[in-house]
Image (cartoon, rainbow, N blue to C red; front, side, top):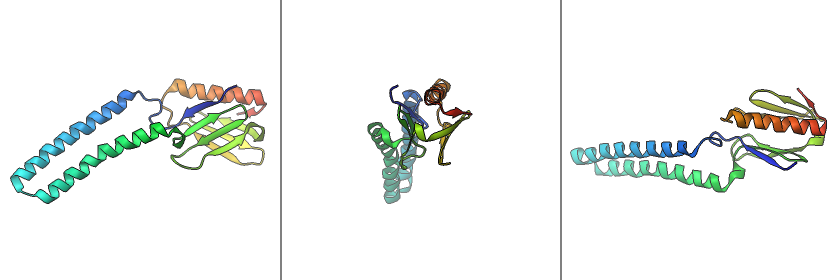
Length: 158
């Protein structure tokens, strides 16, 4: 079987339209803030603090946009669960150490609705949360892939 990777990030299975709606919300908020600050600038002659606020608020959408681009170019930094023929790799938190184990080391797999617990033969436990997977079809595909791997390798499945 080939390697199968599942993204566990909050927006991994969302449509790009969500991002576009978020950018539209940022743009509308930015316009409202700029109109308010323009009024303050004209009415109160408070130049220094107004320009500082405008500059700071303009950095927020830019920072969000740059982080989004960076994550698209570096998908390995995201939360993921990768199942291969030899073992599994996963990262449960953003930018943390990636954990890896072989199927030969696994004793029991506890498969729950939004959680997978791999218990190794040396009593080590690897808990992978699936709560952030937003698509039910993708969630059932993940569980089916884990069941198939468990049956192929003769691992007990609870």
